[in-house]
Length: 245
Image (cartoon, rainbow, N blue to C red; front, side, top):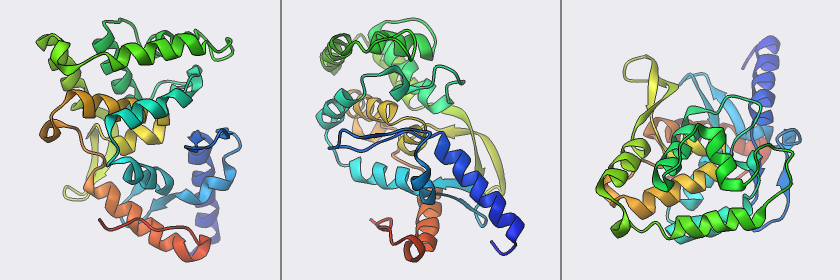
C-alpha cells in the first residue's frame, strides 16, 4: 500500500467490513456491537496479491473451534438468544447464513425465508421485540433431540444437500485467475456473517453428517490469504498469528 490515496481506500474498506461484523467473545458476557467494533478493524484486510478480502479474527476463531465436539457448539449457542445475533432484520441475509438457516428449517419442518426462520428460533419477530429466552432454549432442546437415527432419509438428504451446497458468494479463483460466482459453503464464510449461524452450521454438520461428507471449515485459498495478511500485521499490531497446522 504505497500511495496515500490507496491507504485511505484500504482503511475505508476495513471500517466498512468491521461495521458489518458482530463479535461475541466466548466466556465473556460482553457483546461488541457491530457499530463499536472499530478497534477490531486491524483484523480485516484486503490482500492485493490474492484479490480477496480476509478477516483474520474470523479465521482464528474457526481454527480455534474446528476440533470442538458438536455438544460444545450447542452449548455456545445458549449465548445467542436474540434475533440480531443471527442476521439483521434490515438488510438482505448473506447467502452463507441463509443456507444454514434453510438447513435448520428443513430439519425442523419449518417453511419460510431466513428471517421467518430466525423469528421461530428466537421467538422475536423483530429486533426490538422483548427477548424470549425460554422460547429460545426450548428450540435448542428440540434441536438437540434431532438424532441422526430418528430422521427420515428424505429429511437428512435435503439437509445434507443444503449444508454441502455452493452458494452465490463471489470469490477469486487463483487457478482460473478470475472470480467465481459460486463458493462451497464453509465455516469461515459463515462466521464472517454470523457467529450464531456458525455454531448452528458446525452443530448440524458434526451431528448429522459423516466426517467424510462434512463441509469444509475453510477453503485452502482463504487460509493462505489469512496467513499472508496476518503475517503482514503481526509486527504492526502485536497480534497472534495463524498456526500452520
